[in-house]
Length: 494
Image 1 (cartoon, helix red, strand yellow):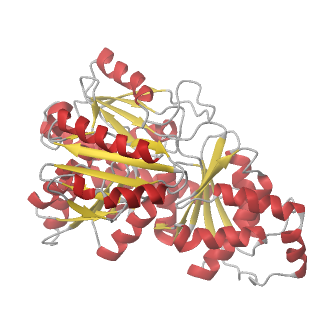
Image 2 (cartoon, rainbow, N blue to C red):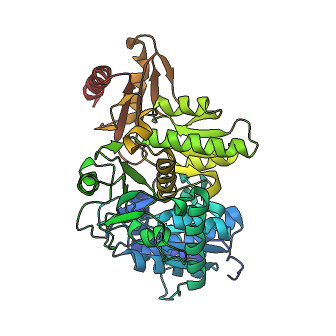
Image 3 (tube, rainbow, N blue to C red):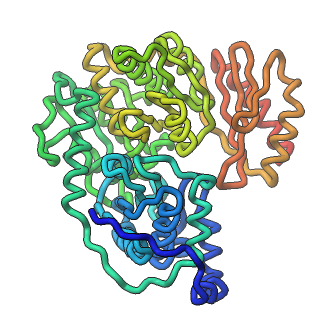
């Protein structure tokens, strides 16, 4: 990989004309719609097209030169029909800005983060994750997979993109050497951290949802990355890469997208089911009965393993981060295992930053994002999956029994409400917190109420006029009562 001096960030007269032009105004509208708190995401072609991707590549290179003095950007893309072209347009923008584009081609988002880590470069992944087929987007990270949010770089990228020149038709070749090195080291790292290549006697189902996990199946469990195949059985579902998602949406947050894997687990009598989202940075789990395993329970189990590893290396009280929507069983497990439990806001960029600031060994979210210090602090669905496979093999218990001790409370799941003024709803909810008996109030992320054996959190979306409700309690009746009470409150203020 070569190094080039970044160009000046001064706005030239020709760029000012572009800003004031019809194209500049169209760019501004598209960027305002697509650039969110943690990533860039929009509909095709209304909000994202090749011009916008070129402009965003140019802007990302400029921003990374300013913030990190970086003169190279590593770029990957998923299997959506628009993604290869968008990746080349983004890479051309990087090149036009005077930086070097290291174009990896097809990869999962966690592979892009891994490449950012091993090459010590900022990165960009062209993907819309679990969104429908008419969406695409970009996940941007700093060197060594550092989180980038609106506050820590995306706002600057949006600002610079408006001033970017128009595409000049340049083409960028994929860096096959870098891509091959990334794939081989990624698979080796997953195996090294989990010893999944030593597991025997299990059988699993992996539902890729026609997303990037279909490619990971052969690289991590098979021989595609140059290592021997794992010594257990893997049944693949919907492993063909197809960004039109002909079988079901690659969004495991929706229960209907877990049905195929659950049926395959039961019909084939296997030990575990894995269901990945489109860019494969998240994995949901199905036990041997076909039931969905709680992401909090899985997070607690993996946290226990990571704490044990860190303590064996001399860390007396390893820090583990959990967002405030995870079950209280997560914090209880962390403490019982000898770790320090640290609550965080929801959102990957903030969690990655907090991991670096505190030296945390692991972090988990209710949405099945799992972050590992030994994976550059990045989230990886495949690394979490292999940890669970290894734990299942070690325990010799069925998957349902493996997580039962970590699944002690009942949760409502996330409930969304469309409201005219989210801030006003939250302020009024805080003012009425005293209506709930024996609780404490916190405002870490939205408004949280904590009771003796229950909690409620109401927070606003970063991208939509929504407030999101999560409730946990000791039993279903209490969850239902609390959920109804807050639902009535929000609906009265909608």
